[in-house]
Length: 239
Image (cartoon, rainbow, N blue to C red; front, side, top):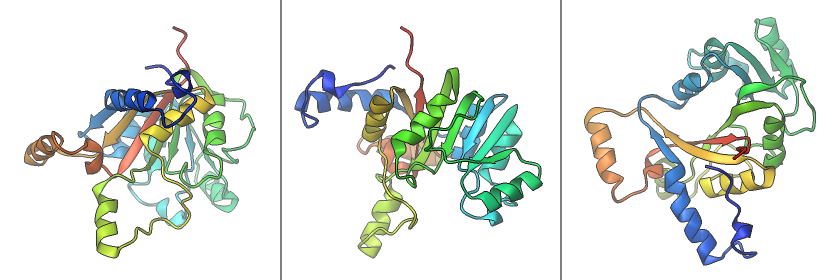
């Protein structure tokens, strides 16, 4: 898809033509995946690949024995996988259990000395103080033709709207610092020199449920039906 740079249109980030171009671009970037859940889709993306999985601990050790623990499933699908986290005691515990995990800040300027086909960043970007440094770290460790996948909650989903109407305020994970939307992903790509090539909406649906959702999407954006975004970035194309 290539990079989108609104500054080539105007020096005003509220310029109407720049915004119009973004409104035309985002539906092209949107890819709806209804055959699996987010973890299953991540497994498909990393199948047989060299993978760097950022933020593997998932806050607590009690997740390690959960059958749905995402890092365990990614390790099972990848040909080679290195996990990354900043919680040293839990990193040590995972290594004792046979995983290949390193204690490192993924917003730092460090270089692991390895390159990967896929850098998966699952539910991390909304926690960090510097999201551009997080993407630069991922970019630094990417092989040519590789991709960065960033999963983050979708603030436009009906889950949060329902919570807002029910509770009068939305209280989410208390460690979150920010929301990220497709327009913000475009800006992150511009600032880090990456291509924002797709954003995936992933949730298993089939039969009548899928048909009803597809009908609803003629009036409501598909984003409303999905709890998470999965942003896909790549190195700039040579063309």
